[in-house]
Length: 133
Image 1 (cartoon, helix red, strand yellow):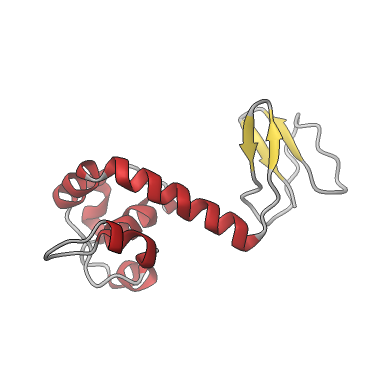
Image 2 (image 1 turned 90 degrees about the vertical axis):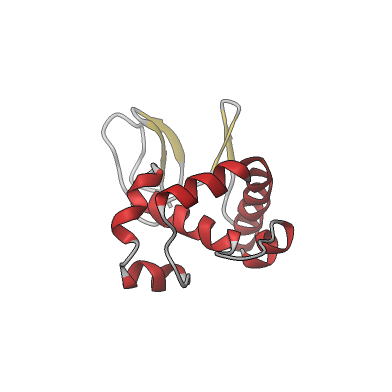
């Protein structure tokens, strides 16, 4: 991530742009999508170490930097997503005009999805697409 983001969005001082992105991804992985959700993690050693960052940004700083660089970051995150899918050789399936990839590693059968217990499939479920390995 650093090799893609930091050369294209350098900073003269302060936190690297890639570290801000990592902090936001960490929040999203925890199901938190608002900038203010970062505040409880500012002094959380595990959060910093797990993400490989030296400092957790404040919500104000994160909002300002990510808002200012949003368009450029979108292009770079698209590139990083493609690299990840290629590296992991994730199976990609088209479904009604959408591109779908399994996100989980567990077999789960959800009622009403039409999934059979054998084989891998992507099927429309009541709350979107359901992935099976």
